[in-house]
Image 1 (cartoon, rainbow, N blue to C red):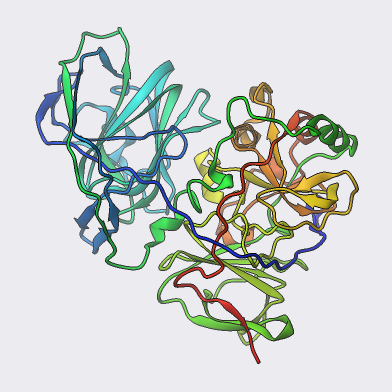
Image 2: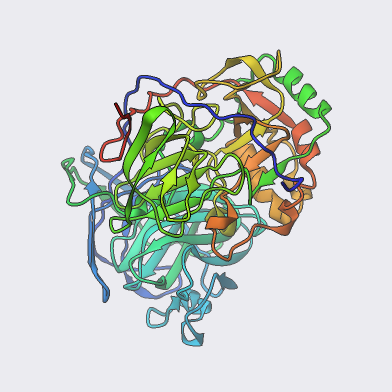
Length: 541
């Protein structure tokens, strides 16, 4: 076992009665009209969609699109709003035209990144086809107040993308997340003003094998340019309609996982209430003299994606329990340690299957000690069955390779500690295997103090520090060392995490001493143990 890896002491199976959850969605409205932006190019006005928060925006829209590969249909929810008319006149400044840009890849030199900020709608940027995430970044030259991004998509438009902002091109903040372009053409996104020098479009899923757009505009209110024409925005009443035409698509697993109101997806308030024992807990944690490991190749779950064509497997477990018809890819393997964790996400149904002590035989059959079923859209925080000691899903708090590549982790992390309390646990945990009297409770939420200057950290460690400041980390396991969990590298293809993570975060002990324990959140609605449309465990007679 590598010295940097932290081995959880135990995992348990839990039972708890449950109830499902709802997802907040916002609709889009807009009209085609003739307009002109501040740099003089005549363009069709894009549809306007406003993200209500800078960190957890989900904007499903009605989309029926046909590409050269296959038509795509997306399930839609439209929110009813009262008719209102607002006229606003302000100085609008376009910031991106002619600025330096960079991209994850280009298809070839004809489709250079600079084409997307050249003011012409006849030249475009196109990514390569090396796989998502694709990204496109523009350097505004200095800090600007940014509140709108407009993209003129080509046929290879994004069906799931986010807008990120940064001051240093290293630590990124989500301005608007889980967006979906309404086909080819202009797509306008407004959001709460953010101060940033760099703006990135991060594409998690595209309608084609690559991603491409003609133009990118970044907008701000300011006084550096002549006033743009007055803009009148009219919001018309629409009737809420929800139509399901197919099983949930794989895009459900390409943005943030689980419910938007999950404790793992909720940012910590600006002035949060602290646990009364916060100072004592952190002092004891600091006295351990440990750093922070990031489990990558062992003691952390691999994530394998399945779909409707993946072969189904029946899996026997301990005490005559079993689960049948689980889609497991033929190349899937469990984590190479005694925990034997295995996480399967079915992109065709949204189901998540977690396993403990999973084992693949030479003939391709599987067995396991225990399992738990979750579904994307659940809270993933307390269920009747779980393979973590705390009762949360394996994917909850897991650092994904795509997030590290994007430079932003938009959720709370999962952390294991040696000194978890032996008698208590707090929400979102439902159990504890703690062994320390007066230790930190299982389920406790640790936060890196926002006043800590993360710019002093190595660039490739700031992404973790930023997540710890914004979302914190929930204690999910008891272990022999302090450890965070990253998607096991046996399931990340050729991608490997930053080398500086391999022997633990260089500033780990400093980060621990600058933590605090935030008061436990209100207990969320219990996840239903019957995840609709998913295979379920049962006890054979």
